[in-house]
Image (tube, rainbow, N blue to C red):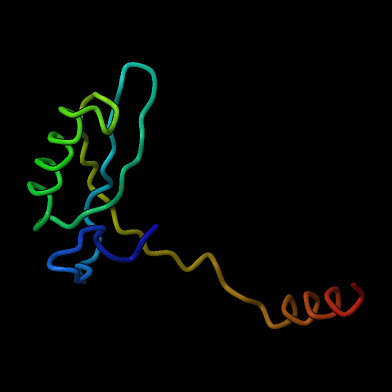
Length: 92
């Protein structure tokens, strides 16, 4: 997942973190288009609508699914595991 909004303004990448996953829901499939911050949500919707009108992207419902931040401590590195991985690498 990108760590920034997908939008560029005046050649500069938006520095805001993504708040929404943008997708297009067509009759058969759903296509992920990118991610955006709340500041650029309307701009993205307008641009995608224009691209649909000229058939540059699939027709369908433009969806914005809110991202939910998750914190976890379940992914931890055990020093013993790192040693084991190192020894396997050496064997290869």
